[in-house]
Length: 344
Image (tube, rainbow, N blue to C red; front, top):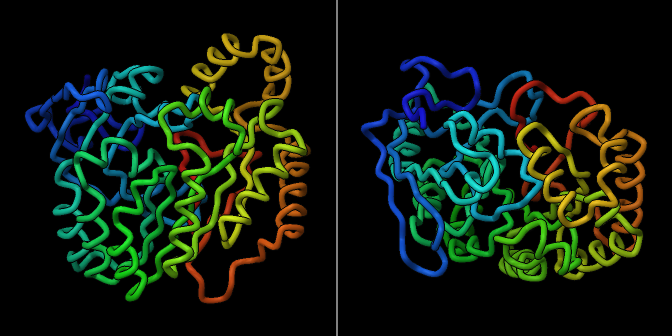
């Protein structure tokens, strides 16, 4: 592993670009059922507030990512490519070799207090999930949320993790002093599909319970309906069932996002597809022949259908003054390099 060259992208290559050095890494394994087969690399990061590359055209500029790699093990995860910057495997290695920035909270407090920081919005969960299984042991998010709360700094979180409810009181405190946006990712409610493509995540029904609980406690929560998986999760009946469930959970908004397959994720997903649905391989090759994104006509068809269903089931537009929600930019001309989901 080239720890000494770690940065947020493939541009790293010198010691000056490193976010931490090899002498700052402690590798651990835990012989407990929930962590069996997983290796944790605990590091003391040099920076925790990361600027989004300007070429990405994202409507936010800053992110905080306390982890690298993700035990959710979603076969389609676009962040897989980032593990290659560490000379780690982007397949099973991404699922089981987890980098933990153990000093994330203290470092964030220091950076937020800097006179150079101007209180810009910070997005979390836009690379890997900050409420993945490791968070139950390392408890990085309470310190992070508290730091943002204490500075009145606006932030947003995107997650598939039910563990976010552990921090409900902190989120309510933060929402009282700044703009807090929470979105939960639920691309489908099909249980068989969930078990095969998102094996390490809580069930979709449990994620919708998160939406329901947050809403009941006065924290508006949107749903990123992502990914809509062509030929496996895009049947009209499946879309209807998902939007109906999202509406029943009390979501303030629903935003569909069609599966995209960037390098790193594409190879892993196509291998999985060949093993589980070999009859679909050729169809995927044709649909994604032009690159990482499905054709515009397909994206528009899905978006239009989901919006029609949202109107039918009474999921209205975000209310004025409510927490900022997810907005998905045009996908036909992606920027080079790793790009993150958009949180507003």
